[in-house]
Image (cartoon, rainbow, N blue to C red; front, side, top):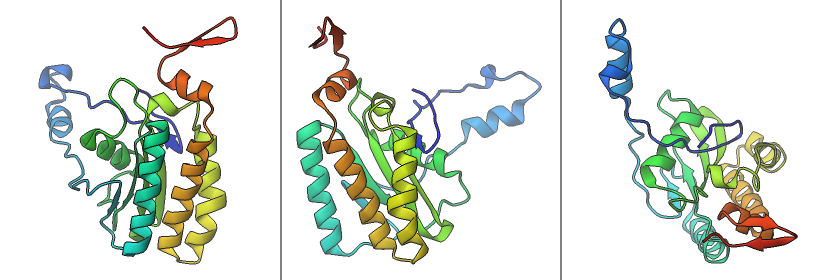
Length: 196
């Protein structure tokens, strides 16, 4: 997988060993080995650790995310955390995606919308398998046009709903070609062929 901008892909967790670093850098090797994953349990399609969503909104988002997964098979989770604990938002989101296993194995087609109100940060992260269908530019546009205007008014639940709704709408509009391409189909002579 690769790591991009606003629509950062989840990076596979890399296994580091002390021998992977030069002997002159034992402290660096130890730091890499001890990098903890975010301590947050997946509560379902919506994990509201920041406590900003009411039960009705959480239920509506959960239903829409379930319908998206039934239709397009895309796993999309909405996450709120009070803060990032000093971590970089891209790393935090990627580490959550990896720890939780968001996206289908072999397709890498997960999506995470993360809202961290105390840090005043939001992020949309996509798996590598969706990077051509939901681009960094798409994610940036959703954040800038749908989320930030509401964020500036301090309406945190509405920020989360606006971002999730825009992403769900975008993902529902994926064409058959986009879905097939994400699943490894080939394009020959104007026809799509499913992988063997």
